[in-house]
Image: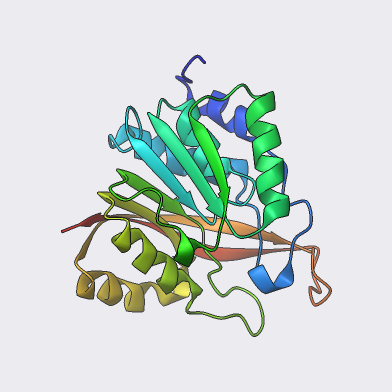
Length: 210
């Protein structure tokens, strides 16, 4: 597999990864757009957080960060998600793209212990953008990344929680080095949605374990 050397080419490859096949409201499943995923992966690669390293994608959905990391030269990449429909699709996409060194596992992230010592963790957890959402989900993902003893964490959150998150990261011995800001499009895929699309302000935090 030839490593991608241009950001636009990465975005084009990631565009071929489909959305969640059967989005489940209880899991707050929203697919990360290729333009956002490619930007974060490209920045992570530029910061030395992907090439020749071991990557874990927690709550991977259809595998955009796991596959994208492999395309950028990761040594290995593991995607973990509780939704077997999404994992089945991710495995199919991996095969169609001829991506090597990628493994997908069906598991609740809290039960996953198969990658202790991973170099870099990506995660786009349920971050509380919908009504009655469990706003604590993203914190459980952070704790799992800490348990995996990763070197670097990239994690998506609602921008409105930034002040709280900065304190939470600091209190958990995570040193924030970068904050990337995005408009995350939420499509009309659930019955309670009233708009065809709504842009939500999110942040992706890069942090290092102290």
